[in-house]
Length: 218
Image (cartoon, rainbow, N blue to C red; front, side, top):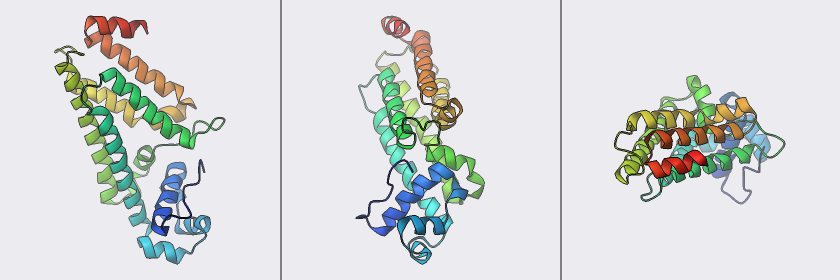
């Protein structure tokens, strides 16, 4: 495990959820069981059942909490007024890097780090609420991108001709594929390069000329 997921001083319910989150990211839905959780937490399977009833309910709650937390953090990045689109992309990269490094310390790269990506692979065994949480994440993240691009147009950072939906769709494709991209590459660099290439292309195609020249030369 990348780090100790459970704080011994935290309530047992929160310790269970924290550990389940780490195990779900690292091993997927099928890599989590009440027996494993009980052993790692030094408690009983009955205690896990007491708090969550069954595995489906536990995974559903962990996923819904993760989606809410992640969307809250990303909305703060993408809907903050006055922040340039290039800065928002840079902050997005750093947000992803922080998550990546939690599960990929130096010398142990290329491992899963995104619960969203992991649970998409296991969507066939999720509850309807779990699948709805994944859909909500994709929908609301793309809405954040649309907001940011429209804001950049309003501030004349991007030209009026910028195709908002098309640009948002490309950003969403990168963000939603971030986990698999780093796993395929074996490190974080490829994802960072992809965001940088997208930024250069966007600004050269639709940025105001002085900004576009500066981005192109960077």
